[in-house]
Amino acid sequence: EETRFYRLRAIFWPIHNFEIKKFLPMGLMMFCILFNYTVLRDTKDSIVANAPGSGAEALAFIKLYGTTPAAILFMILYAKLSNVLSARAILCSFGAILVLLCCVCDVYLSKREALHMTEASIHALQGEYKYLHWIIPVIGNWSYSLFYIPSELWGSVVISLLFWQFANEITRVGEAKRFYGMFGLIGNFGLMLSGYTVYYFSSIRDSVPEGVDPWGMTLNYLMTFVVISGICVVAIYSWMNKAVLTDKRFYDSEEGAVEKKKDKPKLSLAESFKYLLQSPYLGLIATIVLAYGVSINLVEGVWKGQIKIRFPNPNDYNAFMGQFSFITGVVTVILMIVGNNILRRLSWVAAALITPVMILITSLIFFGVIMYGNSVNDPLYPIMGTTMVMIAVLAGLAQNVLTKSTKYSLFDPTKEMAYIPLD
Image 1: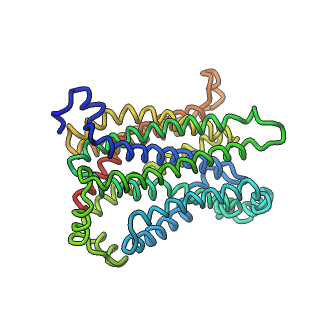
Image 2: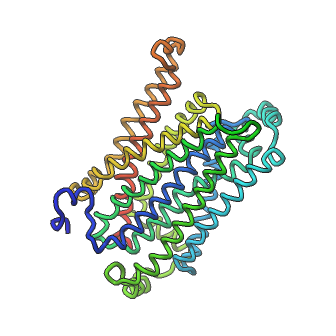
Image 3: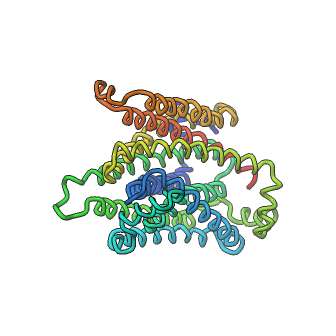
């Protein structure tokens, strides 16, 4: 298929004209999903890290005691629903997450002072129960935590589960090498747009009227865009089921139905776990994903702590995260073009190894800066026009940009390609 394209088109647009009807809507879905993912990712961290009595350290506790149990519960629910409902019905979970986010945000804006513990109460309990220092603000600011959990699940539920499962189901193996890298390329323009959106609406602090909460106004704007983008995803998905998947050039529904009945018997939840535990192939995929998650969270936790020190105001914190997301989007788009050609020209192993090597190198540099900063006198660094905290923030910025860019451009596509033989 690749020989049919001119050299430049093979690099920048390896899509046949008749495939645009199938490819472009899926790319737009990824665009909207990544837009929401970035807005929610930046905003949830800002809300929790800047809550009364809280800090960036509290993020790890919410992930452990809130997000992890919620992810397990969702997985159990999804396993049961997938045996009794269609993929379209399961997509309703997407809408449910969106509604929950909107409801929690409304509570946050209008009732937070009445529903949350006071900052004095949180500090008093932290002094009395030092071993629960970071758990107390998680509970005391419970609506922030409730906002954080579904926002954190957005990536694993909507991107990894709903979108990529849909893509794996309707994308042929011959199309995957050309499509998957390009999905990320289009989707990461959403990352750029969302980064700028977060930065723009987080920078309104000096322009709002006196007496108006600038952080509350920022959240109002951002959640409005999240809802609009979510509606677009549902609309595109519905249109594809009606106008694209009924065309046998793109997807043979009858053939797919036969394959599902013959090759994919319905499994109970216990049988599904047993199958996963007995499959070395799936075990290796799970290990790769787990290793990435642990590695990036170890670095991000320290980095976000440095950001909180440098930007203690939630609007400033969120504006910086918006800039980070925009830069990540730009670098990712560049690497997507390179990565798409790596996927088509090099082996799967070579493409898959680039992300862990990048994590190793950039993490060593970042932690080296942190350790060096702890061993010198910070007042020396205003001579350079900055401080060691800001240097650490910028080193972490570079680490996260390069790591996430290689993840989006190479790690995610190679991981999803590994699932195709199982379909």
